[in-house]
Image (cartoon, rainbow, N blue to C red; front, side):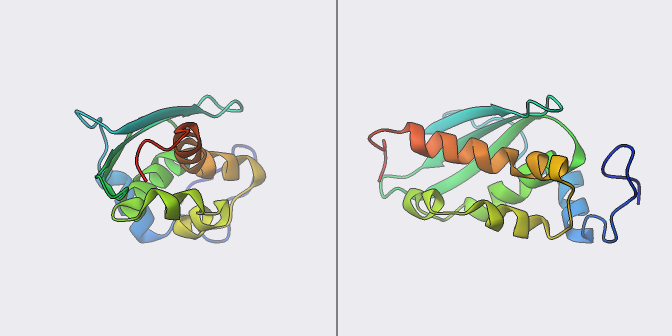
Length: 138
């Protein structure tokens, strides 16, 4: 497996096989036609961009989560894994989701700059949730 951080050695553990396969399949990659909530985030260090579209039902539960944007393998994989993880959860549960939970989804060691890439979709999600003031749905 190649280097995940330019100029540094390859990590002891590369992206887990299921994470890499997920990145190739890109779970819910694209845009949701009529999202209930949507938002964008940009990594100021490398320029990665992520957009999240959420379809939330009347009970405040995420029914669908889609992602779009451009970026490195780490940020794209993280977005795909996050979309799969948050479907079926309530907005209240997601507001309480710690950054560490996002890193646990990836399950690999990351340099500080790659942590920023991995947390970009989570940051986007938290911005969307906290911008809904008062929350538009539960």
